Image (cartoon, rainbow, N blue to C red; front, side, top):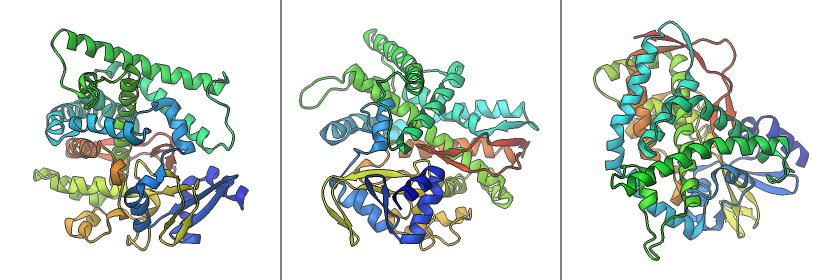
Length: 426
């Protein structure tokens, strides 16, 4: 059973998790080598772990240990008082007013891509590649005040390599420490250095602007000028680097995935695509938001959330000994047949206000939950709505591959391989 669980997880993580719920119910015990684990698939247990008793569960998991090799001790990976202080410092950057200020840059970037697509009507493109470049530009311009349009190929490849590397390390029962100069570790170091060069250059430019009395109005400037409320100390360069890298990666990869899956779902559901076009033509973005939510139900960018039990607990009658690795999975819960009619189907009508209000809070949680819910949720939702509105109002994207389009469960849930589509005019 122990080796069976491990082999099944490595072979197909998504199928393994869905099968575990189907076989064992909403509290599924697991064992990976010496690691005791459990999957909680129902909203009540997810709420318990992420919100009601969140202090009993830490982020000291194998997966997050590997992510720290790239992100350091940023907002995604840090804990305790340090995390709380960083969250308070960063929160103003994601205030509703700051998001509205960023919407102009989001729209301009989307319109620039629309002009590019206009010149390529009738040709086949890799939609995911275009979405990665677009959301990378947006996060760099709006949060970091940097223009990286000439470096998107290098950055995109580094990000892909890092995600695949971290994912492989997470699934290995035994891994060489990152300090040992194996080919795999040298590749990791090289890709991290690619991102660090860009981040360090951007930090230096912002420091110079502050010194010259012309500070920019973005997240990085906020970090450089922030002081601890109690000690008055500023963040160290290492702390700033970790937060910038976190938003650099998480701020574009997740939204790019959500947009790629949205366009894929629309391409395979032409009536839904037509309804979206009609709604956009009327000046409304209501249906666009419903499409994005439904795409994120089926393909949540953060498909799995791991925690470690730091004390004995009982979760919905299921005993959780201290040290247990606990999984809650938006991917599994958001396909739960007791919560969603035709759970594998694509139906944006699930997200009318009335139907949303009728569901339990943790039946749908693509941005996580509890105190650690994604700080960039509002930013990502505005960005996604603008991108879909500007592009889907002008173009239809027709799937241009006969192979099955499958999700690849890395740290995020991106399409496996190129997502090839043909551009057609509305």
